[in-house]
Image 1 (cartoon, rainbow, N blue to C red):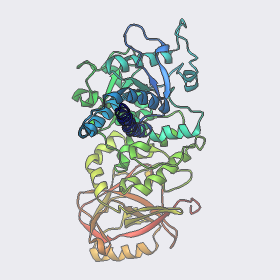
Image 2: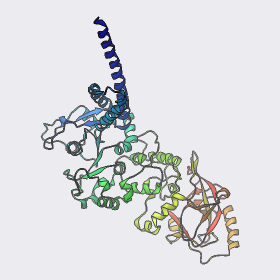
Image 3: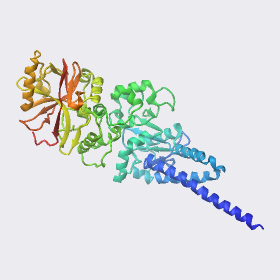
Image 4: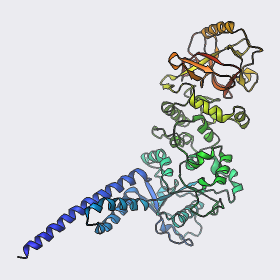
Length: 522
C-alpha cells in the first residue's frame, strides 16, 4: 500500500529533474550566446578587489570566455532551486535571471598611451609578476590603478586592457580582436581613459593620447567615458565617478577644440561609411606605431567588413581598406583628397593625411556647408573595379593656352593663385565670353583637350537625361583630369583640394569616366 505514494514521489522528482534540466539549458544557452558574441576573448577578473588601500596582483586573474561561461553556469545551478512552481511565472523568472547574469558581466575598458613595462598576455597568463616585487614596472602600476577604479568606483567584476588581454601570438585571436575592438569599446560599462601626461584640464591639449591612431575609436565608441590624470584623479572636476565626460558640455567643447571632432559626434557617434573626408581628417594628424594600424583602427569607425589582418603589408593595408570602403559607401567626399596617391593605385590616397585641410583653407571653403553638399550631390553610385574607379563627373575643359576653365559662365578656383603652382588653380576669365562661341569651344575641347576639371559634387538635375548643374555662388569639388589624345582620363595629382566657384548657373551632361589604378598611363 505504501509503494504507490513512493512511486508518485519518484515520478514527481524525475519530472522535476527534467524540468530543471530544460531551464538550465535555456539559461545556459542564452548566457553563452551573449558571452561569446559580446565579450572580448579574454578579460581580467577583478571581483576580489574590495578595498582602495591595497590591491595585489593576486586579486587579478586573466580568464577566457569559456571560464566566464563556467562561472555563470555555477550561478545558474545555484539558482535552480528557486524556480517558481506556477509555470506561468517561469518566463518572467528566466528573463529576470538572464538580465541579472548579464549585469554581472559588465566590464570596464582601458584607453591609454602605451608606455614602458606594459604587461603582456603571456606574462599575465603565467602570472609571472609578483606582488612582493619592491618596484613594479610602470605598466603594471597603471594596470592596478585601472582595476581599482573599475572595481571600486564602477562596481565591475571584469576589466579589459589591450596590453594583456589579447593573445598576440595567435593570428586568429589578434585578427578577431582588431576587427571587434570598436564593438568591445562600445559594449563596455565604462571606458576609463588614463592620461599619463596630464593632471589638469589645461594639460589635455598636450597629452599624446590625443595624437594616437587607436584612441580615435576609443573616444568615439564608448557610451560612457571618464578621463583620469597620471595620478588617477579625475581630470574633470565636475561630479563624481558616475559622471559621463561625454555628457559634460565643458569637456565636449575642450575635446572638440583639441580633436576637431564636432560635439555631437563626441556625445553620440554612429559608425557608418559616410562623411568620409571629415572622418579621415580626424585621423589625419594621428600616428600609429605600426603603419598597418592606420587602416585597422578605422574599421569600426566606418563600419566596414574588413579583410583579414596582415601585419607586414605596410601601407598596403590602407590601400586595401580604401578599396573596401569604396565598395561600401556612396559618399562623393571619398574622392575629396589631394597629395600623394597610393603606391598601388593613382585613384586612391596614400593616407588619411591626404584629406587634411589647414585651418585657413577650411574657413575659405566654408567647410560645414561644403561637406553637406558633397553628401547630397554628385554620383552616389561610383564603383571600384579591378582596373580602376568608375564615376560620373561634369567635365569642364581647360584652355591650355590661358589656363582658364572653358565655361559659359565665369568660373574660378579657390584660392585664386597661379595655376601651375598647384597644378589645379585656373585664372579667372576677364569677362563672360559669348555664350554660343563658348559652347562651340567646349565641344571642341572635349574632343581633344589634355586637361579638364571633373566636377564631383554637381547638383543632380534631370537624372534620367544624365544632366548635372553647377549653381551660382556654390562651391564644388573637382578632380584635375588629364588625357593624351582620345585616351581615357586619369586623375592628376594636386597639392590642395580643388574647389571651384561659379558666378552663374551652368548645366551640361555628365560623363562616366574610368580612372585607372595603374600608373603606366603616365
